[in-house]
Amino acid sequence: MNARIVSFATVLDIVVLVGLGLGLIFAPLTLIWAFDDGFSTDLLMSWAAAVDIWFLGHGVPLSFTVPPDLADALSLGALSRDFTVDVALLGIGLLTLLWGFRMGRRESTAVYPLLVWTLAVGTLVLLSLALVVFMPQQVVSMPVIDALVRPALFLASGLAVAAWVGPHSSGKSLLQSALPGSLADILRAGFTAGSAAVAGVVSFAALSVAVLLIVSFATVITIFESLQPGVMGSIALAVAQLAILPTLIVWAATWIVGPGFTLGTGALVSPLGTNLQIVPALPVLGIVPTDPPTFAFAVLALPVLAAFILGVAVGPRVVDRGGLAGNRADIGFLSQPLVKLAATAGVAGAVSAGFGGLLASLTSGSLGPGRFQLVGPDPAAVMLWWGLEVALGVLMGSIAAVQNRSGQRAGR
Figure 1 (cartoon, rainbow, N blue to C red):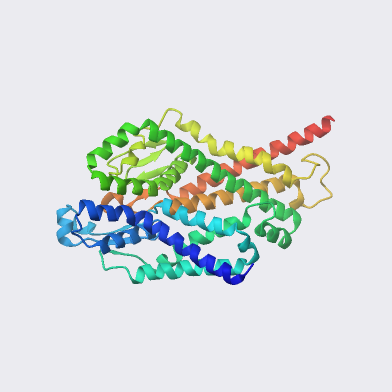
Figure 2 (tube, helix red, strand yellow):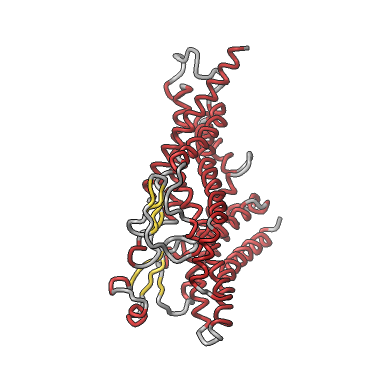
């Protein structure tokens, strides 16, 4: 396999990725410019808006400075003329992450890992720099460092995940060779259980959002019709809602875990209680229930149940066939079966807390002026709830699995 061909393919891949992400946003904005505005406005402003949205999709905060005359027309107070929007539209960032994962699974990446990683991340940083430098002057600004780093982090995360997927992945091989066997087993089992627990809850949250969209379809349509967006505006609104849909799924996951999320100052949505006020005029937000369902408290058991099942799966990998019973005076404290299972549960809890906190950080922050300066889940609360639930579930499941295996062997 030729290194030059791999280099060219990698650079081309990143160019296509950026072009695809920007094109999905710029296309509906161009239709609005052509059909709704009648070519009367500057198309470069639509391009600048597409670039801003693309960066926001990767978690880059956007700072808005509204001119005084426009602020007065929108009835914004003097303190609301300058505000920040930093709630990530994760649909765009998810595209970059999955693109990086696809690149990481290629055979060329296994042959030239350093070359592919360096070129992929470096090319994306350079393209991000070009977008920032050549962006038209507008009312929106962003931190240059964030604009360069955050899209690259999404891509690098996809490449990193690809390095850990599969029984013979390079990441697992490196971990196995660098650490003692028992410690590597604990870390691998804990990471598997923690990440799978997060994936399970997020998957259930995605299913729940789909069901809510069906059940609340009439409410969503009512909000949509009240906006009167027109044909081209409807297309743009549909693209925007698709971009924010993964963000809503993360919010639903934090609701399932327990702490829930806010839709503005004083508007809390959680299984423990809901206090909704005025919500942003986005049709898809019509799925948010005004009151928690009667089974809300039972939902809190789902993360623990998922972790319990995963504990049953990973527990026997950590403890040998001797199980928890028997004379263990001949081995050290850190090699005791129960200590190993507790360490595995601790790693799983830490991993789930880390992933949960990261998702909460990306999907929380400011969504506009006034009371919408506080939107989304609280990362610290999400980390605490998710970490404790997963650690408890994995510990109970792994102990139950090891005890059950020991009982079966004793019965023979």
